[in-house]
Length: 111
Length: 110
Image (cartoon, rainbow over all chains, first blue to last red; front, side, top):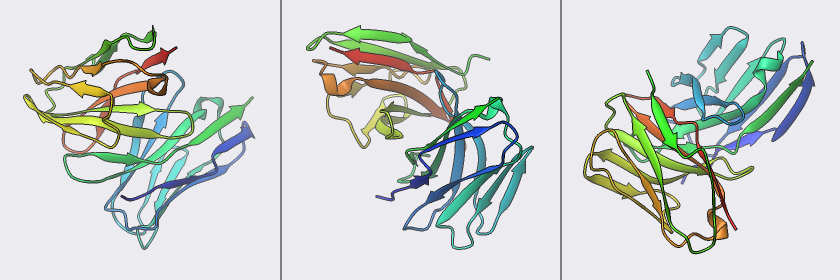
């Protein structure tokens, strides 16, 4: 079973700072998804990356997929309090769109 | 558009009691899933279904049962609740690629 390791586990920053969180595996990802989960709610898909070296941007969020497809990063520029939440990476495993999730990075952005 | 709905939002059970967590989706998705989320552990797949009448075990199925009589509904049954089942439970459905999650049920077993 493929394991996804996310780092850091926790991150507490001030509004306006930049940050990067990581998702790594010892195995090659078929594809990699990033979800954000706000307190009291279910995860919501942010982006899917499929091609090694791929970079996708979503407003202030930049997602990168490693060339070897074993790692991914999420960079947030000028963080806002609305970015607070749990950031989860996930990959498909075993067909039927089943997902394996990492443990997540819990981000707190303070005003 | 409601998406995926779950009831109840919160529940406290005594050890040995049983309950059913309800999940309904209105997107006509064939694939549905139940996950549990424990602190610091991410989401673990309990059961999944690829269509009405078809279900299969995920990573952590012990102590749970499911049924799928319609495309829309995918209830999760807990028999003989144990403290280890204290968790937040999420139902999800999937079309082509993305999973859509419900708001979750926070269950405490004491």
